[in-house]
Amino acid sequence: MIVRPRLEDHLVIGKYTGKVIVGVGLLMVIPLLVSLGFGEWDTAVDFVISISACLIFGFGTQLFCRTEKDMNWSHGLVVASGAWVWATALGALPHYLSGHASSYLDTLFDVMSGYTTTGLYLLQDIDHIANGLNMWRHLLTYAGGQGIVVIALTFLFKGTSGAYKVYVGEGKDEKLLPNVVHTARAIWLVSLTWLVVGTAALTATGIWLGQMPIRAFFHAMWVFMGAWSTGGFAPQSYNTFWFHSLTYETICIVIMIAGSFNFALHWAMWTGNLKEIRRNVETISMFVTLSVTTLAATFWLAKANVYPDAMSLLRKVFYQIVSGHTTTGFSTVYAKAFVTQWGPIGLVVTTIAMAIGASACSTGGGIKGIRMGIMSKAFLQDIRRMVSPESALVSQKYHHIRDVWLDDGLVRGAMTITVAYVTIYAVATIVGVLYGFPLDQAAFEAVSAASNTGLSCGVTAPTIPALMKVTYIASMWLGRLEFMSVFALGGYLWSVVRGR
Amino acid sequence: MANGARRKRISGYALGMLAESGWILAMTVLALLMAIIAKAIWR
Image (cartoon, helix red, strand yellow):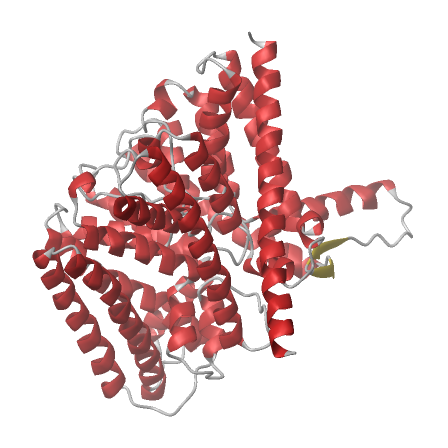
């Protein structure tokens, strides 16, 4: 029997969703200040309207849903997934009011793409959008990378015992420190330190390349946010190709890969456990899969003689593969070059890299290194079991911060989520194929959306059918939250309708 | 005493960042080697 949620359940969910939306409204103050600083009055008005909408919704919901009850697991999951929907709907207001989108659906696409750190976009003429809106685009991808809920945990939740449940609901389940609010703050410490160092390095490079200091600074900060959050947004339609600089690209590679690391790995390294990087199952997994995909793409494109020398080959191939594997979505080739120059093998290899994706509890998406590691270890364990005597006890462990013994529950968990990812990749691909796109291009774009990468081979455009846009939005949302909390939200809605 | 602990903590963060960056740059060098070998084969 399905139990209908009680009034108290709705109140708890409403209260905490309201808190998250207040956080989104407060976040919009930063782009508002940028707009005012650059004298972009129309954009500033757009942000004042949007902030007002968020605060009215957020405080109104909290006022309406006053309760002292704390969250249980299902509340936490519903709040996490539901807050992302509301944050997208309200976060899209500045995009819509800017007049750079042809429909509200397009702005929802862009904002979901930002929060989920995907990087696909439908905004038009982005080379000429206001600085304030550019700040918002990149800020929401940076905030989405840490997690909207992590922001709320850091600044608004003040140590509630239910906080951990929302944190897990957002697809992060590592506790860097015993307290979840301290964990959220440690995540911010790592991200903000990298923000300062990365922005400084890119600003210096930009000035050296001839940019005006103020422009170099903002471009550097936005590019950093796109790289670290593995989001892939950049202030120009040519993405990071616009800079034509080996130094800029090398710094971006460092930031992209660092952004794809598990926050638990960062914290272990930062607190003195330097050996962790070469022992951790996720870095080993990434080393293997990144090497294999780079090797395949490098040899294929060298054989096809697409690029004239080794350095060009490195700058094009390694950059796009790193961008795909870390699920960033930065590119230094034209979207159509994936089809016309990279060909089917290049497309497939990049698609595989995107599908595998980054590390768990990072800003990235995809199946994740830890699951690849667990499945590989389980495979090895089965082979060892087959070649060992029947009475032998075959055990297997992997290292992630500490040694963990492999058990059936862990393997089943990894397999379940992997199957869910493969299913969503397949469904989104089929939708693309049904609308007439070739299989390899439909698969590339579908995997790019569902793994929150953002590389495009030219399929994503404002002219694609609305159903494809909705499919990609749902794929981005499901992929980022790793399914469970979205299913919990579906179950909650179902129980409201059919419960007794 | 508190300053010493703080300095130690901050230098730990910096060392951690440097080690992460070093690992990534090593991967980049490996990719460059792959590119050089690939180009040498299909010159």
